[in-house]
Length: 239
Image 1 (spheres, rainbow, N blue to C red):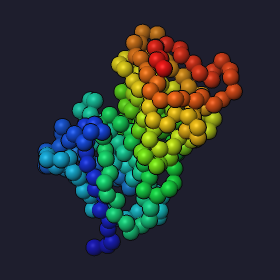
Image 2 (image 1 turned 135 degrees about the vertical axis):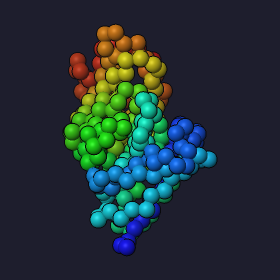
Image 3 (image 1 turned 90 degrees about the horizontal axis):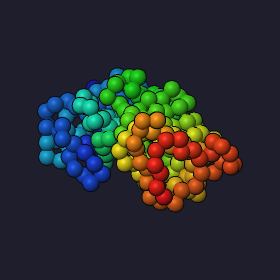
């Protein structure tokens, strides 16, 4: 038997530490892929949603680990992406949350759209995020969540069908973030200005949509003033 590391955490229904409803201690419904490799699956505790994998270690630092809820009924999808610090350390305390694409890093390396292309909806339909290496599209209703002290630097456009919650850093570059929920109430919160300002933003429910967005914290859109810098095509945005 070769070397191994543990990858562990909790499957949650929300950020208040509520256990994911499908955790029963026996069904193999939490999955892990290391650097795009074939997924391995485990169960999550019926008590608190805890899960743990024992896997071969990544072959280098800063490889992508994809942990996701699988299989998931409609509305139950959630994925966490992170990068490892080294090839020997266990990775613990991860939180995979229903309804979120959660971005964090065990190292200091930012996550990019190209990173997420390593293992996304193309590899498993239960992952609520699809990247072609340049643009990232989240499923309807899925929040984009940047973890505290971590950085998302997409390197391209991002389309979000749910809320936006930045507790870390967002490096927009020259990309556009499009919020395209068709219905429901969505929120933009956390750090939305300064070094985490957006470059260009579009709100668009579609002509028949009813979605609303609330900008809960001070927000900056940094591109030079133009017709496409901040667009509210359809929908209601409240500041």
